[in-house]
Length: 276
Image 1: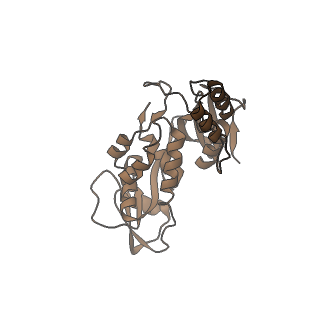
Image 2: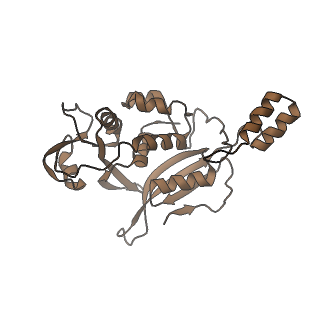
Image 3: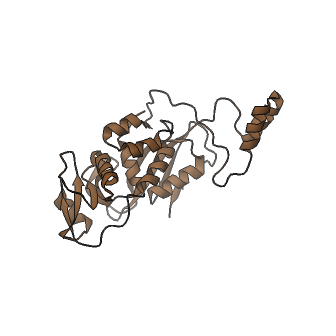
């Protein structure tokens, strides 16, 4: 069961809170429910809880986020904007404020715009950048769908990326496959895929790619994730597996092969962004 670690249900702007849950999706859902979309994620890690002498520990997702302050204009609700518009006598402002009060089919109203993040933030966080994503090798068709988001909108980027990547994370072929690429033997052993003379399962690393059209694309390290995603977009392949290294309290637990899921793939891309 997911666990929300915070004692104050009304966390103030600028404060941080820690959320732990069994899955990334559950942790993000709790964060959004708790503080809304205007939160800055400072860290997203896998940690281990419980167990005895290092055994039988349970792995959980831990998010640490900072609550963003409200907008600077001091008008923080649709009703307050309506009152301010009436006081000003501006017909256009009144029409706009009234429109914001109309029921919407999905989600709360209104969304508060957070203050800009300082250029240097010693507490961490990332700044998303379309230029950085393109330099990493992400395809323009994906990057363009993120261009409207603010650089410090962590939840917005993770949400949109997860939606895009969900189209690439379908079921794997139920036939034997031929696995090629760096660390192929390790992924072949850990993934459980049946090997044979079937479709190509290509593991993407930092080197040159072979001239094949894969049915499955995996990555050999997080830095290869953007290239693997770009290849999947270009060929229509399914994202397969990724190699990651889990750590807790500074201790390494070794390389792990995991099935690529949309939100976790988005978090891998987040880890490659420049720090704020």
